[in-house]
Image (cartoon, rainbow, N blue to C red):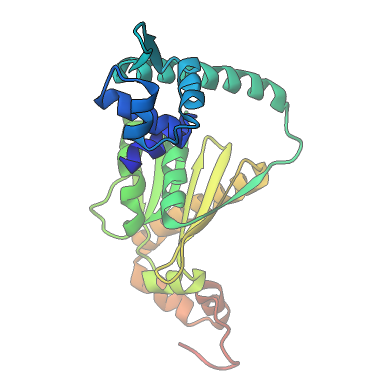
Length: 274
C-alpha cells in the first residue's frame, strides 16, 4: 500500500488524500466519520481532506442523510490525470523551448554512474539522424546494441571500432586488435567509450571496474570534431595493422622508446627497452 501512496503523491496527492481515496475504493459510500475511522486520517482534518479530493474530482458526494462519499473509478481518475499531465508537458515543452534562445556557450554536461552513462549513450544513439561514430568495449556493447541495430535499419550510417570479440557487429564494424586491450585500458585507466552523432554531439565516457563510470556530453563543435577524428584515425590504423600484421606493428613500436611512451603512456629510462 505504501508504494501506491508514494506514486499518488508524485501526482500531487497528500498522504491523507491518498489514504482517504484508497479507503473509499474499498468501502463506499460512507460518511466522513467512517472514512476517518477506516483510513487513519484525523477526524479534525477529514473534511478538509475530502474537500481537496472533491476539488481534484477524485471523489463525489452521494445525496443522503448524513452525506456520504464515493470515489471516482480508479481507471477514470488515472486517465484524467494522465491527460492533464500530458497537456502540461506539451505546453511546457513548447513554451520553455521558445524561451531558451540560441546558446552562446556550449554546455558540457557531466554524468556519473554506470547506469546513467549507459542511458545517455542509448539516448545519443536514438537521436542520431544521419551518422554515428562509436568506439566501444565489449562489456558496454549491450547498453546500445539494440538501439544501434534499429538506427542501421532506419538508414543511419554507423561506423564503429570495437575492443573485443570479432563476432560483435555494430554497423560498419572494425576491431581494435592491433594492441593488447590491457595496454590501452591501463593507459586510459579504464575503457574509453565514445558515441558521436551527426557531427553535432558527442559523449565521451570511461568505464572502470574499480570506480563508477563517468562521462561528459556536449555539442561543442571542437570536442565533437576531435572525438570523430580520434575514431577515424583509430579505425584507419586498425586496418593498416591488419594489412601489415599486428605482430609487426607491435614489434615496431616496442623497439622505439618514443613510441613506447606514445602507446603505453609510460616513459622509459634512457637506454631501456621493452
